[in-house]
Amino acid sequence: MYLRSDERGPAMTNRLALRIALFGGAAVILFAVLFFRLWLLQVLDGEKYLAEAKNNRTHSYRVSAPRGEILDRNGKVLVANRTSLALQVNPRKLPEDPAQRRAELSRLAALTHSGLRHVRRTMHEELKLAPAAPVTLRQDVGHYLVYYLQENQDRFPGVETQRVFVRDYPDGALGAHIIGSVGEIEEDQLKEPRYRGLQPGDRIGQSGVEDTYDRFLRGKPGLTRVQVDAFGEPTPNGHLLTKPPSPGDSLKLSIDEKVQVAGEAALAERGLPGGFIAMDVHTGEILGMGSFPTFEPALFTRPLTQNQVDETYLNPTAPLLDRVTNGLYPTGSTFKLITAIAALESGKLSLGEVIDDPGQLEIGGQIFKNAGEAANGAVSLVQALEVSSDVFFYTLGDRMWNTGALQHWARALGIGRPTGIDLPVEDETLLPSQHWRNQLYKEGGTDRPWSAGDNVQLATGQGDLQTNPLQMAVAYATLANGGTVVTPHVGKEIDDPVGRVVKEFDPKPRRHVHIDPEYRAAILEGLHDAAQNGGGTSFDVFGDFPIPVAGKTGTAQRPPHLDQSWYGVLAPYPNPRIVTFVTMEEGGFGAESAAPAAKKILEAYFAGRLAKEAGSAEGEG
Image (cartoon, rainbow, N blue to C red):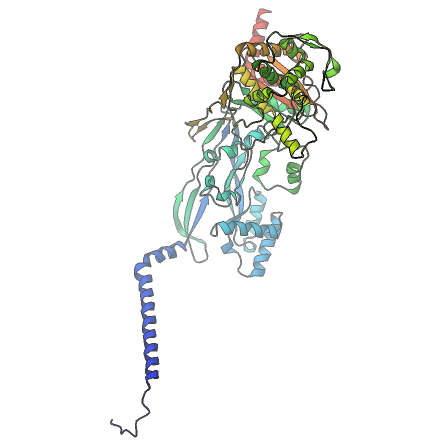
């Protein structure tokens, strides 16, 4: 219809037209974006989101792998596996109502003898690292708890149990410090490259060879995937995938069970803190090694009670401490072998030289006396080792006090430096020297610089010396084999699950040192006389031992403790195959505690030969 100009409304202004145009343009752009997004979801990413939707209807369960067995050198099983029940919580199945959720977790905490705070902290830590994984609250739960949960499922939604493998120890605590323990991986360990791919709740070696050889022992977990309904419950015939776990490889140790049993029994019989080691002098293979008191590795297969924590970690006798690799002690007269090599090789003593031993020696106004104030008269090196003349070795220490020769040879033989043993912890020891004490004096850590008296003390294994049976065994082995500083080790080989050898361990020597064969023979002769000649310091123990040996007693002063007992022995003499070292804290004279223990270890090692010789003697009779 046509309208006259006076009947028309007011004309649209330019500003209003612009607003309408902008609004319409924005609407078109918004529609275009929405259309493009829908097209992107439906066409380009459709398959991706379809797959994710399907994944929401499936649950994957990680199946733990059994760890490889640990065997002795003859194939005797030292560590195996057994099945255990793990208590787990699926957070997605817990009640959504906060009050109901708290009530269930409180009931669960009471059942597992832990606190609500502990349960929540465990769940928080594990879910932070693996949001979709069930949370393991406790390993090795009893069947009574499983039955209770099954009977009261309506009160514990989301709580389930799963069968897992845990370590089993047929011989209890035997070899505990060598074997070590297994435990759940910790948060900081998950960041380490060696544990890449592991998840919270996975179990790894935490100490001993379980740690060192974890990558071989651990195995690979399996996977089970099932289809679930909207409530997260498995559907009938919903099994989608099963990938079985791959068991870990077995570790064969160089340990001889007979030697290990004999050594641990000898320590336990005396009941004093101490340690022992028996090692092949040519290869560095450790045949037995133990520390007393010891611990039960099986304790770590389940949560510890507070009493167990106190007994294990806070016990003043330190049962977790391996006194062979981590003890820090003066060695007493067992160090004299090292002093003899240093004096001979540095030219401060000649073979056949005689030194007068009146029972005491004065140096710088200080009197140094023999043990028991004995006076041995004129003695050569062989005789000095036989009767353990302190004055003889005090004299050698005085001759070398400002030359560094004693420290040079002690360090060359392995004292005060890492041995390279294939165990994860080896404490730093101390070989006192002129440089060390003078620097300590400069820093205000002591009241005097180095003096001749310090070297005199070191020459007899006293003073500030802090070493252990492992380093002393390496030093004695070096003399026995003619100068090769072996790398001590307990790992012998890795075998796959069907028994095939996958890898053998034969570590190279640390270094070679030159020891004059004449010097070696003289020192071994002195040690042999000390053990099996009538005047020797350990004749009462080894005088009737049918196999020739070369041994040295040591009685170390260790204030405020009573004297510490030491014994080092090489057998058979004159071409040794094995070195054995024993020490016992507050055990008194070397021949009183340590030497009898060493004899029992050698009896186990030479059992076959001793039985054969005994049979021959009976036949002749």
